[in-house]
Image 1 (cartoon, one colour):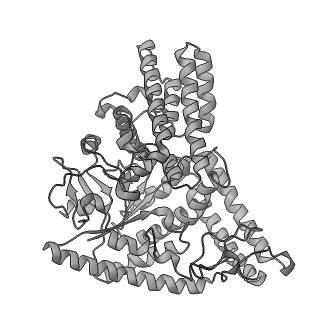
Image 2: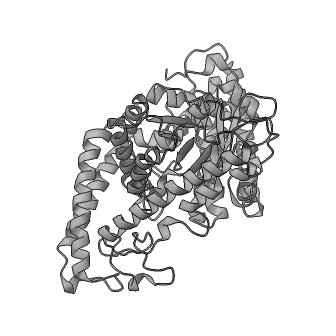
Image 3: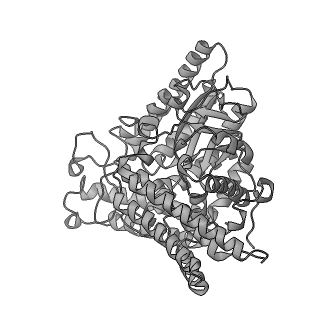
Length: 521
């Protein structure tokens, strides 16, 4: 059996900057990846394809795809894309920006192509997304095409998180998915595939039966899922030999000369006019993008991948003496946002695999059908550099690790104190809820990742400290008895960070069964 796993995630970007990092990142990914990948999944569902993909959708991304501000801004962004494409289609020779790849004539052709794509995206958005992403996801889940993988709220690096907050975040994240799509996930793509011994017990308590790890976490033998330690929770590992054929730290299909170059912009219109051309060609010298050449490369790479999966399944089955399981796993944003042609490739691969004799199934199906081997004594791991925790717990981010610990300690102390002081009262405590919300946003794993990888490090540090400040500010007012000020501050921060409306600080220590559905009262 072959399983394709996609992990969809962006940090909370709404109301925290627009460009070059901020909401623009969300809208580019939405138009480039989420709309186009879901169109592929709907097409497969319409043609009777079931059990095709295990799709991770983090609660923080799902919240943005349902958020009224993000929905309105996305609609405007799509209209702006159409206007920019029209400008490129009508551009005169004398209007060409210095250093633009290709000629003005080539940009005219691209403008017409982009205008059609933008118009199609607008129609799709107005028809299927205008009232939120949950309905779009639920349609392919209800069709049986997709298994949804859940995760904890706000994408924390779980091994470093206070156990109380880790437990709450996980249960609330799974309940959030249930509220949005009517299905509580039993599978999970943990943030950063991060694991430490004992987490399997928390997973079992939350109803998680299987989760993803990176291949080296299973010592490279990913041919079968493995029960973790003495639990029934199964860890499935990414097959690096197959996955790296698509994308690795050094190579992969998206670097082919005929695919659209992600990094080269026409600075007048914001469109991407060039193809990769070569690894050594500078942006202004790259050749114009040609959709027909790119389509030919997609066909070539889809066939290559199908053959690679088939060969790997045969060799692994022979090696272990029983039918093997091969998993390829990627970020969803690779398909369309980073690799423009990715959704085309995805559609062709999923349609061609059965024709090549390959059984396709989700992780849930693989577990149910017995693609499970002997237990593994899983150790500390992640899918980051070194397959350890250095990206999120290394010297470069020691200050953020310390910040996270201090903020969580402050938040929990204030919430506990308030609960004692208002014991016996009914209803939500909005101050405690917002403290919890800001603390969760502070400890998002994204900030340490962006700093360690030196991509938008300034933005990441600013975001971590901004949420830390919000937490401390509200806590200080509450702890000193300035209740009106605490409520005012909580309401003010909530206007920007208003995700997870059902988050209720009263559930920090409630029994699992009391805590599974949540409350919005």
